[in-house]
Length: 552
Image (cartoon, rainbow, N blue to C red; front, side, top):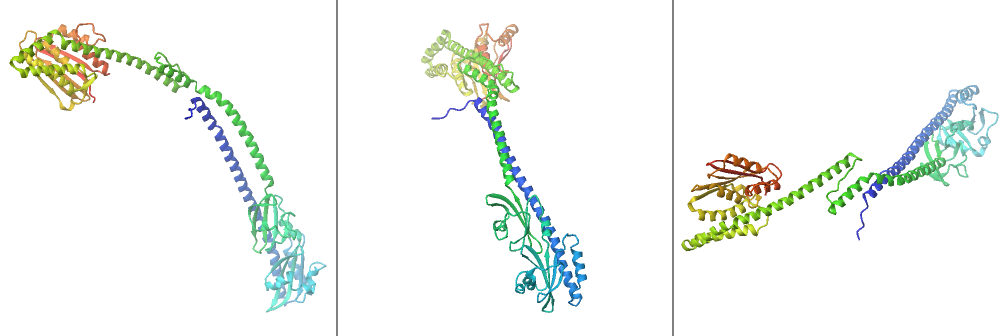
């Protein structure tokens, strides 16, 4: 079973809701997505910027210490592998002048004897004989003259070996003050962790995100971007300095997620409020905007029930006012057309009745039958022709009820009538028909040409012995022109003026039915300047011209 279509008012209401609530929802979702995307992008850019700042600061610090060890090694070589305390202290103070703590600088011989120390004590792991093959000492021996670094006992140790040939002569070790590294990681807006290549943490501004051994959490070390750690969301960015130190800047997204949740809740509340107000308001709005539609619907139902006197009075908007005016004009034209059709039907019926009266009036029928009887004795072929022609006229008039016929069909009927006239009047009557072949299939009102010929016969002979009638038909632009012209008695000026004027009337008040009925039928059938035009001169003949639109 097909579902009944919704009313126009309901469709308008749904449209209001669809084009108000749905766009608000889409815009809200898009705005939220844009906010989250923009926030994440800005946060990532800020994170990377601070990571670069820490990296740059750490690189500058380590370069200072690395250069300091290079300077001390060069001093030892310049002094023929002897330690100049004053010169070493000068290098130490010069390189660490911007830092509060000068740190521990120790110079050891190859057998781990202390040759120089910047502070009163030396870490035991440097002088213990068992430590020569591990820690910073192992690293600097492996580096063979290059500076190396390692984390030991939560301290960053930097070391360099001084060689003569293949023999190790001195071991220079510098222990970076913990405060210096803390300065590099002192950012407050996010977590910062500085590690070596193995993940051991040198410095950090948080105790989180590390394992029980003091290394950075493996989930942080192995991934970048957004990472879930123990139920928390973090954004991680990592960079590596030229000395191999890892710099991690980590943003805790917990508060951001909470902010987004709050925004979602606020947007949901606003959206529900808008949806509620919209649904309530669209009911009244749709009723108001469709009031004129209901007027039109009611008017159309009245017309469907047969009431053509209904009218629309709409003044709410220009468009509906135009519809109302056009509807009223349409009904007015429909009423006029119905009246015109009724009149046309009556006129057509009357024309057919008058035609039959003309064909079957006693005088015409008596003369025709008398001629048939007479001709049957002396000329059976002529009698047969008259019988066939009379039969054709009767069949055309009675059987075929079409309002319009082709020019060819009407000429065929006219030929039957001419056959009878030709036999009746013999040499007293002559005719000539010239109709263009290109209009033979055009449509004209039925029984239009015969009354023109009847009129010429009735009034043309007068007291004359002979009458000639010429019938012509041709096309002129989009019109068909038919001319019936005779050389008979003609019409005097006064009578012609009467005929020409009564053709202009909407109602016939004379006894002249033939020409008036033709003219009136044409005026009713075709809108425009169509109909009959009559011209005549006394004793010279009459010309009747008929103009109708061309159509097939």
